[in-house]
Image (cartoon, rainbow, N blue to C red; front, side, top):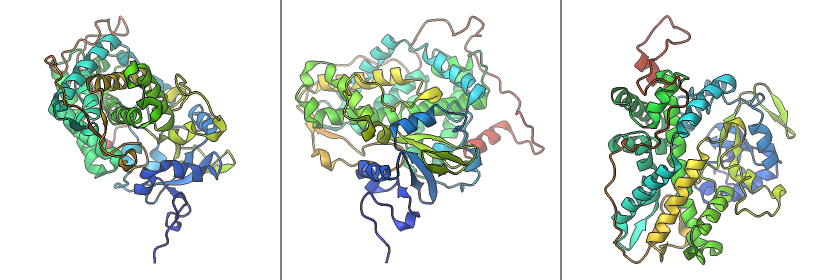
Length: 458
């Protein structure tokens, strides 16, 4: 007979570690976090079957880890070497030469490319494009009287925005997001990783032929002179951070506005409820609930626990934000939450991400003022997985309306910002040249084969 554990308790099959996978955790993660707090600010968990980790559930402890990249570096390769190739969390945690998985001078160099390129995105132009994109999506279902706002709106809007920001053909953008979602959901992770590789190779090849006013072209032209391999990995990181979590932020915010009496009674009052709802979601249900893994250099005593060297220490943004030690505090306008992480690895795109989410929420509320959930809020289903807080669907009903829209611009033709490149010495947006591999191997493979194998974690 298989032993069973009560909700919120670790099962013997998990070797005393609380599982962060499966439908029970997805349905009520707060119960798991409450049980984990009995261990203190850090607790033993299992990210996937047979994948142990330490989860930081205390707010102060999370800040201590996030602000100390010397003791808690981001490079996972020592841990990764011990994982099987089909480990389901590997696509989300494996090493890539991007600013998420690097530290020190390398991290600073890679992050500068991202932040400088993001700085060229004009927020006014971005807002206008979000509004236009939202109108187009809403017009598709506004006359039906019902919709799944996740699949028909929240999921598509960030994708379409990246089609513009990346100058990316829609078909390629669709493939990218499907692959990224499968990586988050741990659905055929090796296949998802391979598809990500293929799509980014195609995008870079396209930008080499036709550079334009878009993020990949700006990153190619940056004074840091990224290699092709580095460029692809920054694009994967931005795509992952800007689509899946963004759709969850939008959907979770709309859910809160429609289901929570604190907001539902005041939706006609303008944008204030939207901003308040965003703050509430970022505190209570951040779209990335558990992530930002680091790997102690050596066995480390921390918060009364011995942390094994090179074993993942994962930050629970959701649990830390709701640490009882913080007490009752006003959340509206309070940006002290950890939803964007903290320290040198804090999210560099939090302002554009918040703008996109708030405009998306405002537009749907303005267009469908009597919108309501089609099912009781407790019947909504959450997707399983250790990293995200994501619904499977968000069904709503409303009075059918007609929403006029303007024709969309072709992806990549929006001039997001006409400012000069970040430095007077920056060359025109032309292709970058792959630099030689730093450690030549006796068995030299063609560069594309090497890159595909690297992205697949082999």
